[in-house]
Amino acid sequence: MNVISSDAAEAEKSARAAGLLDEPDLALSVQVLQEFYVQATRPSRTVAVAHDTAVAFMVTLERLPIQELTLTLMHAALEAGQRWRISYWDAAI
Image 1 (cartoon, rainbow, N blue to C red):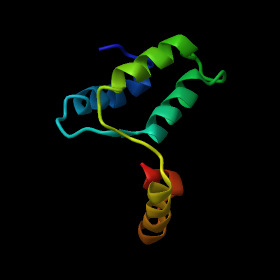
Image 2 (image 1 turned 90 degrees about the horizontal axis):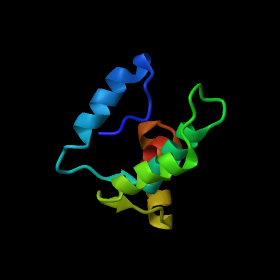
Image 3 (image 1 turned 120 degrees about the vertical axis):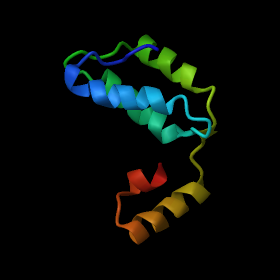
Image 4 (image 1 turned 135 degrees about the vertical axis):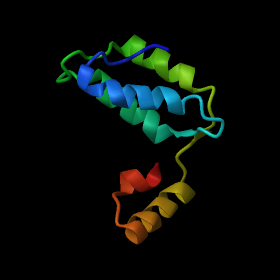
C-alpha cells in the first residue's frame, strides 16, 4: 500500500486506515475524497503531496462505492447534524 504521510505521529492513523481498506462494506463520499485532496496537497503541510500523486491515490479509491453529493444527501446531513449535534460536514460523511 502507498503511504501518503511518513510522519511518525500519523503512523497509528495510517495503520487503522489501511485496515479499513480491507473491510468488505467500505464506501466513501465525494466529500471524503475532496477533503483528502485539500489536506494532502495544502502548501502549509510539512511535506505536501504533489497534485498528481494525490489524484492517483484518489483514483485507486474509486474501486469502492462512492456516494455522490446530492440535494437529498445535503438535507439528510442538515437533519442529522441537528439531531446528533455534529457539524454539517461530519453528518454529510
